[in-house]
Length: 206
Image (cartoon, rainbow, N blue to C red; front, top):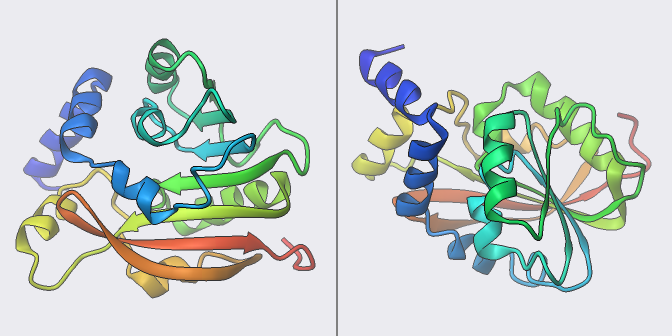
């Protein structure tokens, strides 16, 4: 790890600093626009994996009109989310061991989360998410990718705390047990993101 990466990591370990960075540099309205027709519905159950401080969900999810659950392994981040977004349910939870019954959620979302995880961890989490998705449910994924010629974006991504930024094929290879309904790109602040809409393949062994 370079000195610059170490400084970034230590700085963003502070939840207040991380929250400020999220608010200033992420235009989450772009996420809602990218997944229009999925995340902007009413009366559905939504699972947000790796919800962090809840900033993304707080901007794009109607927590009053839907049943929203955000989970994250960081109890510090969950504490902040609970204080700021009282209409949602936020739980400190390992997504490899989700404490909800089968077929509990209409939609699950990973937004800027997978690039913080290694392949094995992702596959274990996705298997659990598949279990708790209802038949006909959807999983939406949005992750940054390096972009040739976008030097500023690539610089910031190289300093990101997530050490597992993959290319599009690398993300697709992780989606065992899912059908890819759609893959495309959108701009989120400085960065180009790839997006996926996935549906569970119930006849596939985990």
